[in-house]
Amino acid sequence: MSRIFYVNGAFVDEQDAKISVLDRGFLFADAVYEVSSVLNGKLIDNRAHLKRLHRSLNELSMPPACTDEEMVSYQHRLLELNQLEEGLLYLQVSRGVADRDFAFPANPKSSLVMFTQAKKLIDSPTANTGISVISVPDIRWQRRDIKTVGLLGPSLAKQQALDAGANDAWMVEEGYVTEGTSNNAYIVRKDKVIQTRHLGNEILSGITRDAVLRFARESGFDVVEEPFTVDDVKQADEAFFTSASAFVMPVVSIDGHAIGEGKPGPVAARLREVYIETALKREDL
Image (cartoon, rainbow, N blue to C red):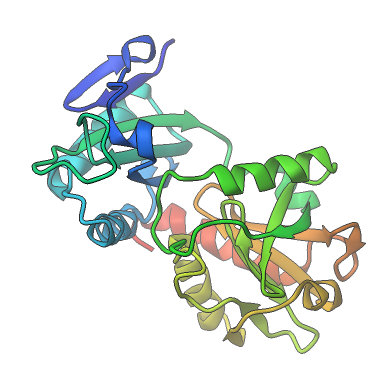
């Protein structure tokens, strides 16, 4: 069965899902996006994703494509049409169609595109084995706090990791890890403290990050929001990352160096368990 896409007011078959070649998202990456996970046919923490969407739009002076109420109704209809029980819902808002010019159009009409992806999120094999990462220079622009579709830097880093036989890359700037190609990075130190980089323009304020840090503190873990180096990762007891598509994912090696015992540790396992348990009980985390 062909997937149904949402494109600017219409639900259409995948082969009919088209945008203009003059869409600024296509020409300039002048667009922002969000990805919400779906469990048991329900959007998880979607309200927080829409709140971050508005922040991204505001930072770029880009008008929303519709109201939040309309957005949620479109999202739910898309889940129904695609009969999605577990996976992801992607949405993208661009500044819309205008003749090619670096300057913003005077009266932009934002475009909205959405689609779903079926994916096993809970029974993930890599959650049991952990993943490997390599460290790479962070070559991205200086406003990574805005969730734009300009993802060539992370894409290059991801491919570099795959070419090196690893699963992902953690990006490094001025000696410190910023984040993964599509995730926030953490270590569990020898003193059992969870450490992750503080929020700022250098990283994205992850929706899953926010929930997991809250769960960690509620579970009695100490949390420090400070930068760490690749050497800190190598000396840590554990490492993991968080994202909407992976929840909490153990990282067992970096640059070929085993982290801790070289296998998923108890802290990452516990946080993943808490996240999934909570998400299955309620949509807003």
